[in-house]
Image (tube, rainbow, N blue to C red; front, side):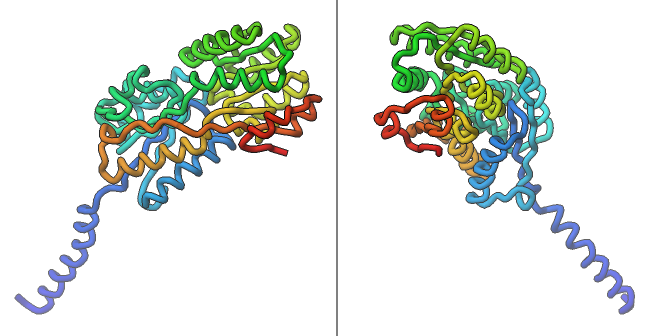
Amino acid sequence: MRRREFITLLGGAAAAWPLAARAQQPAMPVIGFLSAVSPSDAVRNRLAAFRQALADAGYIEGRNVTIEYRWAEGQFDRLPELAADLVRRGVNVIAVPGSGPGARAAKAATTTVPIIFGVAEDPVVLGLVANIARPGGNATGINFFTAELIAKRVGVLRELLPAATRLGVLVNPRDTRIAELVASEVQAAASSMGQQMHLLSASTSGDIDDAFVAFARARVEAIFVGPDPFFNSRRVQFAIMASRYQIPATYASREYVEAGGLMSYGTNIVDMFREVGVYTGKILKGTKPGDLPVVQSTKFELLINRQAAKALDLTVPDKLLAAADEIVE
């Protein structure tokens, strides 16, 4: 072989080597992120916690992991289609924090792709896992409680307004299971405290405005806002309407209080998103979802907005202030 021919052959092999090496490198993992709502400030804050947990596990979006986002924008009937689309995309894991309907849609879409959920209801009852300690199957995640906290939220509201007898309750009918659960549990708690419940539904911004008008006409003395991702995205609207109609309201998460709402009691949802991120990182490293026990929330926080109370001409009892985990000034 002539020297010129040998050099040409060697150069061609060298040029082909990087292509072969790249072909043998594993593809960047893809996380499917399924949400029942639209991107918002609160969701962005929660996403930051999710991404930080991934980063702590060594996965940084855009560098060594891709996240495919699907937003139902409050239209729960779109969730099955969006979940199926993520499965067709070939994602390595589907993360569904904060949405029972979303988790059920993902579970219906696949029996093989790992699913990490964050749900307010019992995941066994929802059909997501076989057992809390040993989930089996392709799903596991975080269970942050709702029903278990409803009586406590009604009780805290009673401590603030001991003379109140008419309680307004607002739920989102698009999540039928949670709406029915909230209505049933609040009715039981309110009846035991000698209160009457006035139940209304809202699934749009206009519905929320209409509900406050109806609550004011019914002369309710306080409002229990059901836990709901769409309601959370409208938390500033809730604060404005409660102030306009001078009706104290209680909420399920701290973001409402930080946005000007009066009081909240429940799980720290940002922490739940972080835990979903932790489990998602474990899945990407090879752990099977069936081997990861469902994490159940054990810490709940009471927040009170002192300025909101002042605007409503309310004096918060010292005992309630002392019990609060945080006072927002």
